[in-house]
Image 1 (tube, one colour):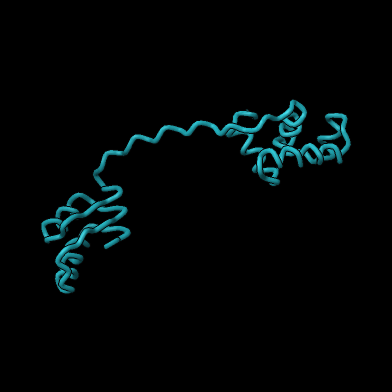
Image 2: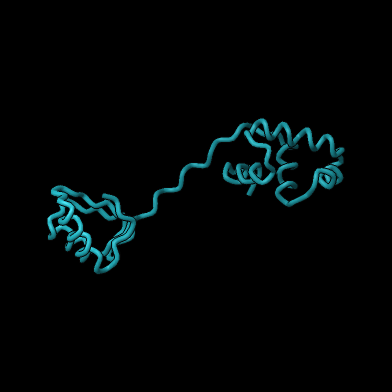
Length: 135
């Protein structure tokens, strides 16, 4: 049986309902339950009760951060275009700053998009930051 949350006092009612249904072997899985409620369930005849987080539990240690993804090699020009995209500049403004036409900037972005696997400007920046290309 899966129950999203067992509030204080719900354990007794749950045991009574299960007895009425004649459920002889039950394991309850829940995301949240207090230790006293888990005790009530077990004393009431349930075979097992597992809570993802109990009210009195010790917080788990956070999982180690995953290693940044390895990105395909980007040219210095592509990185400079990405930096300006991250600053929120349009293709035209990027071109003016780098001495390129807006069409050339668009071409660089298309090449970067193919390398990183997305055409979304925000996602290009996010992938580049996670990969350590931009800081």
